[in-house]
Image (cartoon, rainbow, N blue to C red; front, side):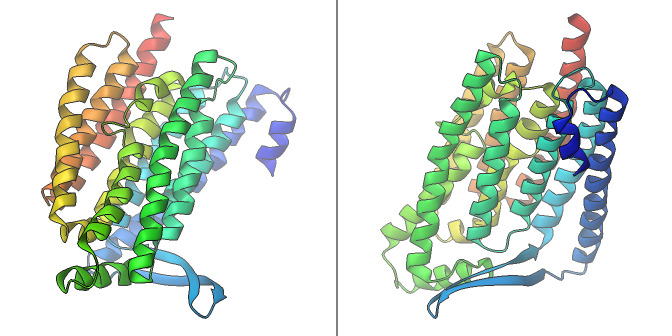
Length: 348
């Protein structure tokens, strides 16, 4: 409410406006503390599934909403919160002279909330809801300086490209529900595994559904051929580039593949597809990065290439290696983006 009031009073004193950074950092710090606590509890190997609410349409169909905490969720939660806190602290001074200071922190807080909701989702419907919220936040953040035509075009390009991936994700979810009758991760993997091994489902249709799910990850993680939005997305403020396009949003596609890996493993053709896309992206991203003169675009193509490495690792079944590289890349690339922002400011 305080932040909304500040948004209605754009003439508020600069020092009063800058107080809005504190609650954003505070709330994300609390989320980080909870994430760390949940990670410690994962050492004992206890997965946490908590049912919160159910929407029953009829006797044959109901949607359960809750959260699933496992090692993958714990890793992603700590990654999102720690990088987010550092970026918010950096942004306080970086954005202090911008007229959209309050709007910036409102968007960033909304984005962090959406990402945390995504990684703690217990079923595919929840993932799709938060997937769309993350996409909407990216549209707002990339087009933060919407009065600049190049930024307005960049956010539209990112939005349209990601809609292709979102359509694939939705079709994959509907197809899997048609096959299994469930959207819960705890049931989905076991049902698909049994159906595939017992020839209880057309293997071509199951592979097609898995391919559609992978298309969603390809678009969000800027993999070939849906990588075209990432370099133009650097038109937003540098902290946005550091948070979204280095550490968190592009990691959402990797998270989706990692979460669905038990589903993909039973379909060798999908694993081969993941590996192939990863290899092409590695080579293409590295080559394009060498040809750039703009520092942020060079880092963007570098991000694309490194995400290709992670996708390749998942494609060959090297789950732990992929997560390790995801963590190290997120922190190092966020630091590189923030450093590039300081360089750009010093040269202006």
